[in-house]
Structures are given as structure tokens and as C-alpha cells.
Length: 291
Ligand code: AMP
Ligand code: MN
Ligand code: MN
Ligand code: MN
Image (cartoon, rainbow, N blue to C red; front, side, top):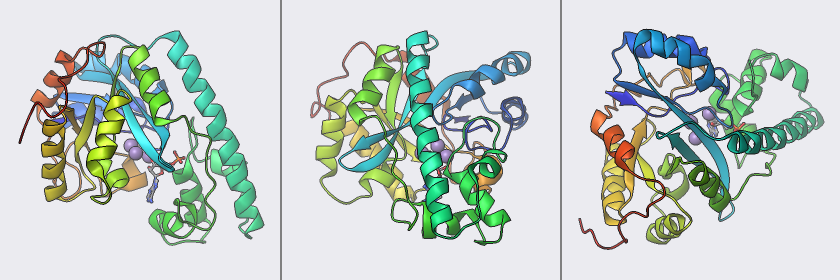
């Protein structure tokens, strides 16, 4: 079993990078990808521990990207070599837009009557701060009973205090990942495509923007949806990926490797296939493969 989608406390997870590696080794994962939001710091910190444990650790990242008026998530996997200094610089720019969004979000919450400052939210994190840190702070102060309630009422895209962020476009995010030798994968397509709308058009268009694969296996979707995305990937000649989206205590129902109530078991061959891809070469033309 492998897990190609996890977060450390360098973004919105709660385990320190070395703790995540130790946990992965203890439960016997064959490979682990750290895919923190907008930072490679978790991977950088985890590497010495992974070497000691003999764990196959993969450098990854999860980027927010604007597509057709929605915020989508793109995973980048760096399997042939680590990202360039230029890519790291570009990521620093993303962190700046995140900080601006956080400042505006804190102001908006204050305007709405919540006694919350950015400093106290930031004190809950170790590096990069995201909406889950705001949610945890709102829960600690008794404004909501759970992190989920904070999202549903205030922080989600349709929440009353939502503040949009200046995100790169989907095309730019995939292009930056490709340029540094990475493989761009659409994270949890269920959240973007949701089974509604012209799915074929979305996937086809995303593929033309450089997308190489979709995260067909994810802990927060029903089994029939997983099967649908497997067929979709085959039809459009896209690679498959999968992971739990482990965040530690931020999303305590999601367990490393096994997902929610053991609904996940991603096979090592998924990683072998990704490793055999050459990001510089196009995949087969779509419609060549039929389900
Ligand atoms: P940010 O990158 O700071 O905008 O925060 C996004 C993170 O918040 C995601 O990676 C998830 O961990 C979490 N998140 C986003 N939307 C929701 C939601 N509707 N319910 C629960 N958690 C969410
Ligand atoms: Mn997250
Ligand atoms: Mn995501
Ligand atoms: Mn994630």
C-alpha cells in the first residue's frame, strides 16, 4: 500500500514531517508522497528521517488553481528529480498571495463580529497558514462546534466570510510543474467535476493545458465515483494517482494509507506507472483507448 497525498504541519496537517514519516514506516507503507499546500518544506524536513527509515519518500506539492471560476487543486509529483530553484521562487510568490488572503480573511471575520486576529491564528500553525487554522481557532473560541461547521457556515466558497485568493490559473500551475520536470495531476476531481456538467470537456480541456493524470483514488468519495474516474482516465489516456489526503487531527477521520473506514488501498503499481511517465512527452492521443 502507498499514499500519494498527505499533509504535514508545514501546511495544514498536524504531524511534523518526521512524525509523518515514522508513522508511514510503522504502518508499513511502501511509499509516501508529501503534498503540502504551496510549500516543499515538509518534504525537505522529512527526507533525512525517510532515509533512516528506508522509506520511499516522494516530493510533491498541492497547488490551488483557478479553472472556470472555481478553485481547483493540482498535485505535482517530482519523481525524476527535485524542483528547480526557479520553481521554489514561484512557490514563494504563491505564499505571498496566501498571506494577503489570510489578512483579508482575518479582517472580514472581525467585521462580522468574531474576536480573532491573524496573529493568534498563525500561532496555531508551524509554517504556512490556511483556512483550517482559522477554523481551528474559531472552534477553540467556541464560535463553532467543529472545523467542518466553520467551513460550512463561514470559510467554504459559499460561506458568509469567504475571501477569494489570487490563484494561478490551471494552465499556469500545470505549466510550472511540467517546466520543472514534475507530473501534474488533478486532485480529488470529485470536488471540481462532481459528476455534473460536461465532464468530458473539462478533462479534455485540462489535458490540453498539460494535465497528465487524475487522482482517481481519494478517501472522500464513494466507490462508484472512483470507478468512474478510472474509466475516464482510461478513455482520455490519463495516468491514475491516489492518496488519503491525510491531515492528522485537522481531518481526524482520514487515516494515513487507509482513508476513512478503510476505504482506500492504493497499489504500488500506480506509483510504478507514474515513474515510467516522461513529463516531456505527450501521452497517447485521447480517444485512442476505449473502455
Ligand atoms: P486554503 O488553502 O488556506 O484556502 O485552505 C484549503 C484547505 O481547507 C483544504 O486543503 C482543505 O484541507 C480545507 N478545506 C477546504 N474546503 C473545505 C471544506 N468545505 N470542508 C472542510 N475542509 C475544507
Ligand atoms: Mn488541506
Ligand atoms: Mn485539496
Ligand atoms: Mn490535500
